[in-house]
Length: 303
Image (cartoon, helix red, strand yellow):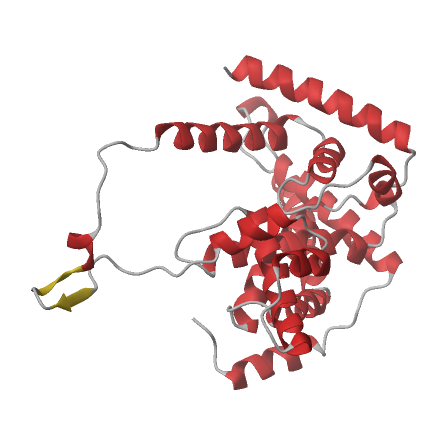
């Protein structure tokens, strides 16, 4: 449900009161968060022979609170980044800007949680990917009654935007090949995206004709055969994704996502992935091969 515009304006106004962080401040806050997490770990219940003194507990609680405050400050100072990314996709989404901001904030929080200050990266560069992923998931999950895979949903957004632009330019509906060229997708990908763009009707919707009135569900043909193969395939793919995210290093999983166009990405070459993560194409090839071997072993063990 969307919030009133005056509340959204107030939210934007409050964002302007929080100063953006410098690189040094990002590093300092990230270190305080890390120290706070370590303190929270040390505050966990212990055996009697290693119980904390009142003074030690007070120091740890102070460090833990400092870490929580650093986390809140880190998130607050980067909320404008979420607004910027949400505004970019709002024109091609049926969700309100406030709903998109809420989804993007989830990605920002995840980015702050996983940010590694030792890598020397600017946080905005790292967080943008997480925010965009959260926005894609939010749109894919909430825009439609029947959820689409993220890759199909991302392609559908591209096709919708290109279709609107080309219809205005050509003064007619664009052809399949024109949409493919405009979106840099294959014709099969465009066709699959368009096939997924269908309306949903309730089976309880009343319909009537010359024979009388009835619910739509009473007129729909039913089959006793469940699509078992399709269900099994989807469960297998979901299991592989979960296994990869659990067992592979973040960089290895990212390389597979980019190389094979998984989870909303477009398939990328070795050179493109190498340029993105700052390594050579041969290094990307090795990472990919090792990741596939690790994934294969993990799947076999799980089976």
